[in-house]
Length: 175
Image 1 (spheres, rainbow, N blue to C red):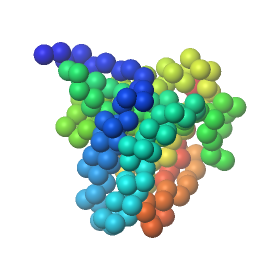
Image 2: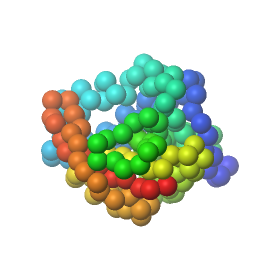
Image 3: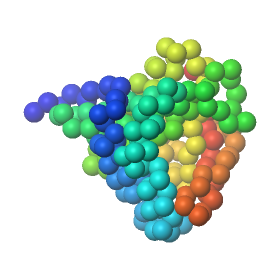
């Protein structure tokens, strides 16, 4: 059995699997939190993680997806967005890390770290000078993960989860 993690660019053929991973990862991470109403979770996930939404996103020239595969199975992915910025983000050529998802069975196995390193390498190769992201104010595990890579809080923005406006911290890292 192959145990080598492979990271590759995603393509249009990956839309269905990416939608599944997004849905499952987001649900597993946030459904049990008392601040997240089931109807708000469903509304957001139905819109953001449909196969059609992912396919449309894959066709966007500014969106870059990396997938992580282990033993031929897709176990996580990252999405970057070029030409995206928040007012509080420094830099001339920022790039946004929109998603960094891993199936729950693979959390803690280096999938997120490998995807992050690939994203940072891509950003550097493409001459971006800062990477930024939004992370839910109550997602302490993710905040700790990003701090390990040198991300620092530079502001906040609203993340709309269904009908619930939530606060995301905006983090950035110089490249």
